[in-house]
Amino acid sequence: MRTQLPPSGLARDARFHRITTAERFADERVNGAGEERRMDPASNDVADRARRQMHGIFVGEIQAMEGAGRTAFDYSIAETPFAMKLDMARQCWDEARHVEISLLLGDHMGTDVGEYSEAVTLFEAACHPDPVFRLAGVNRALEGLAIDVFTTMRDFATEMNDPVLHFCEDWMLADEVTHVKMGSTWLRELTKDDKERQTKALEFQRTVDGLFNFRGMRGENRDAAIRLARKFREMAGFESDEIDDIAAMAAEQRAQYATAY
Ligand SMILES: [Fe+2]
Ligand SMILES: [Fe+2]
Image (cartoon, helix red, strand yellow):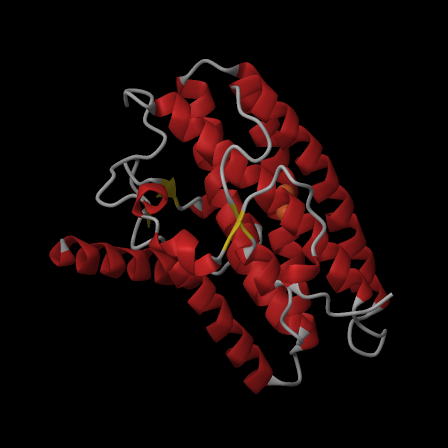
């Protein structure tokens, strides 16, 4: 079996509608042009927003499964220790369960596979040739985003009095904290004698984090579209100043975007 599978090689049936990462980030409906709290129970189109978010989570879970599977497989033992391969295999298994849970949550919320588009941004970050960059970009930046999104979704479920959604999001959130923690641990372990490689990987993480602040939609207050889940990030091996950094970057992007419109 080949290593380093390109995004064009991913298996999808005719239900899925692929868009590019550039198209995804150019779509202001999704990214919230001045949109306040995305998962606001008082909003007129809250059901559509929730379904759109759920579909986004569903396709993200598929790619997280594919990415973790590739990282378990793509490298020799010299490049990634066996214990790290086991962690990636465990993550792949977790993500497979998340795909099933998210698919059933789609039924629960009234959406079907392919009703919304799929950009394979997450998998693209999982195609980096250096495993350390995958840990930084996927396990820390994107799985970190999953922590924020699941916390937001779980709290939304509480407000909507939906125990099914609440239970599922809370369950998946616990796994995501573990996945980010694996990223933090292995990133440090693999770069302990190579600070330059570590710095470059953390810079890559910062780029991905900046992109997924969605022009500053991520923030710490209750009204943020995606709420930065500080406590869970700390549990997952983020230093306080790393979280401060993401929050500060988002605030800066928010201010820039507000003056642009
Ligand atoms: Fe997941
Ligand atoms: Fe995950």
